[in-house]
Amino acid sequence: MINRFKVLSGTANPVLAHLVARELGSQLGKCVIERYTDGEVSVQIRESVRSKEVFLVQPPSPPADDHLNELLALADACRRAGAARIAAVVPFFGYGRSDKRHGRREPIMARMVADLLEAVGVDHVVTVDPHTAQIEGFFHVPVDSLTAVPTLCGARRGRLPARIVIVAPDAGRVAMANHYAQCLDAPVVVLHKRRIDGTQTEVTHMAGEVSGRPCLIVDDMISTGGTVTESIRALLEAGVQPELILAATHGQLVANAREKLSTDSVDVHEEKWPELRTVSIAPLLASALERLAADGPRGELHSKSLRQTAAHAKEKI
Ligand code: R5P
Image (cartoon, rainbow, N blue to C red):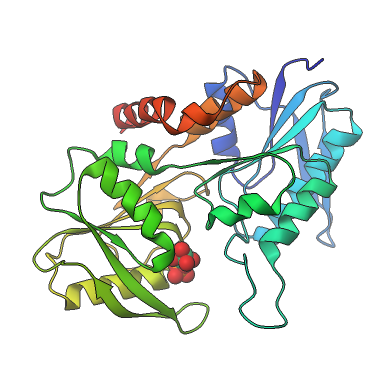
């Protein structure tokens, strides 16, 4: 029988882990993570996890390999210490973009991450706005794929300019843009993006009317800022009202956006970006984990509790 839960964090985002634990009416479990001088990781869990449901809050955000390794080490330590169940709470699913082969001799890293997590004993995965839905299919264990779209919309509702258009920066973001459009009752415009290399992209086509209208560009993640920068350039060239807002679930780096909006799935530093607003997804994660611990249904997370979470986020801003 499972004897309650324990929330543990690696070094990727302890602030979010602490907030999640607090939302659950608990505290972070004690563990020490160090690096040997040669760079190898050392993990020690300093309290019992035997027969407990363990929530490991550790997104493989940059530096992805270090944080992924810590997550694997934490899961292995919990399994060997007799944890009843281990849930990897990875709001940002690192390597999610490597979900297919573009050429003949490439790995599928997202699949590799899934295999590694299962190999060390992860029984459940909780993630938020993964790059593609198919990542869930890389796992044999259950995956709860949450979305931060209502949380982000709730944080800005009533404070968005009139006649705003939702912009999907590439075809892969159409479903997400439609979700924003539904929440905000706005039309969608789709850009067609061609990737030149790892940091540069080019917009080749635009489907929809943007002239004279303010835009909300939405994306799952901002990495180098290349996609966003090029989308803004193309939108300005098409004559949009120069009032551009950017909403991304996983904010890593942004260039040239007038206002930026992201969640705390990745540890971001607001002081470097006076226009950045970070919206916490701790309540969203906590309601999923609460249900997980109680073996309750998570389907409702996409309806009722998400609306509550959005309202909660709105109050906090
Ligand atoms: C790509 O398909 C993703 O959805 C993001 O648009 C992209 O990964 C963002 O990366 P960057 O900021 O480097 O353009």
